[in-house]
Length: 107
Image (cartoon, rainbow, N blue to C red; front, side):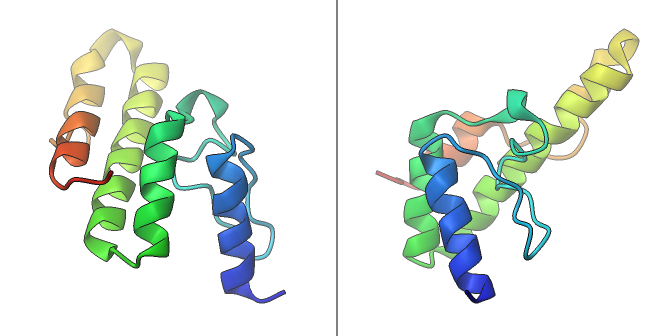
């Protein structure tokens, strides 16, 4: 199985709710839920990402990856700096999940 196939399998399983860290590429799922289950995105969001991935819509994929990374950073900050939650709120990107999804019709 080549690398592209392993990534495609990982995304397919992730959309269905099975978050698996890719052992071939050593990559997390797009939302990092393979390593941090509490970060798993809603199924509709996972489906939107998978559709953009399949269609090679790199702009949407990139925006959604930014959104997922911002969520992971916010989670990290809230976990490690609970006395200073503003740090998590402004950590990386001003882009909220809803803004990212509204940037482009992903339906």
